[in-house]
Amino acid sequence: MPVTEPEPDLLKKIDRIINRGSEVTLVHGRSSVEVTGEALAALRQIVAALNAGPLSLLIGDSWDTELTSQEAADLLNVSRPYVVKLAREGKIPHVRVGNRHRFLLSDIQEHGRRQRLDREQALASIAPEDGYSDEDF
Image (tube, rainbow, N blue to C red; front, top):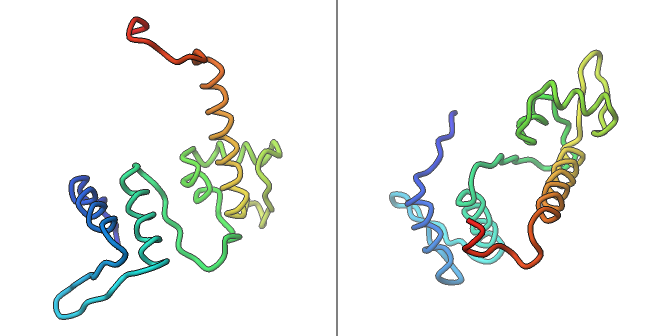
C-alpha cells in the first residue's frame, strides 16, 4: 500500500495537539484509544521526525536486520552502485550471498552517523568561530 506524505499544516496541528498534555485520545468512528506514557513519547518523536523532513521508517523486531544494497542505498540517500563501491572498499561491513551484497541495518546506521559527523566537522572548520554578521551577506 503506497504511503503519502501528510500535509505540513496538518503535521504542525498534530504536533501542537500531542504536545499539550500527558495524554491524547485518538478517535476513529466509535473507537477511541488513549495514548499516554512511552507510547505518547514515541508518537511525539515520529511527528517531530515527519516535521523535520524526508525520512525512512523501518518497523521490525531487530536492529540487525539484513538489508539489500538497494535498501542500504535508500537509507543513506545514495545510489546502489555507490553503496556497493563503499562495500568493496571496506568502508561498510557486508557479507556476500552469492553475487549479492548484504548489510546489517546497524552498520548502515553507523556509517550514516559517521558521514553526518564528518560533514558537520567540515562545515564547522570553514565557518568563522564568532559566526557571521549582516555585513557578510
